Image (cartoon, rainbow, N blue to C red; front, side, top):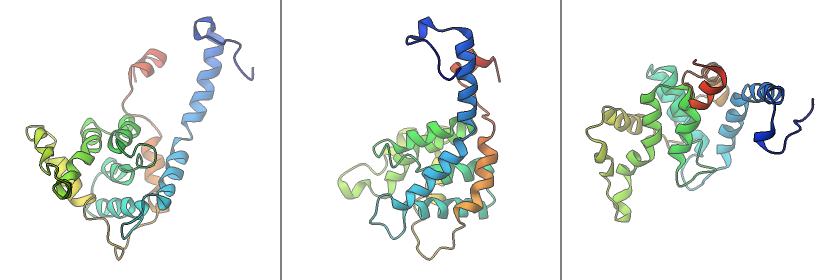
Length: 194
């Protein structure tokens, strides 16, 4: 079978979905390659800073690595701006959605909200509320998000910082993306529990 026969899902067969499932598994196995390619594309992203978006995330991930952070935190820092290209108005949510199956709820929450927390450093220049992050002040991971932005985001625009290259982080990306830790309802329906 090269393609399924149905044109409406309601007319499909088990065999067709087993065929599609096999193709999807093969496609999912290439996620690390696609994310590494998207990461490298950040070299040509938004300009105006002293460093490229790629250098920005490499600098943050290098700082996280050198600080002895966990693999999931390093991955989160490395990919926290991966959504900039396609979701410039909601890049945090896009990056968090990509990371969600591979990181803890805490890391997912931090990445999802980092854009709002980062506004502390510049919103007041545009008449905005730099303390908008305080709406989450009682949240259990509030300080973790503050620390994420302070240690691995707002300070990572230094053209003289000695960052590790993408290739340094590639084994970590491949390892972390090899097996989703969190499964969603669609996954459970298809495969049963993790």
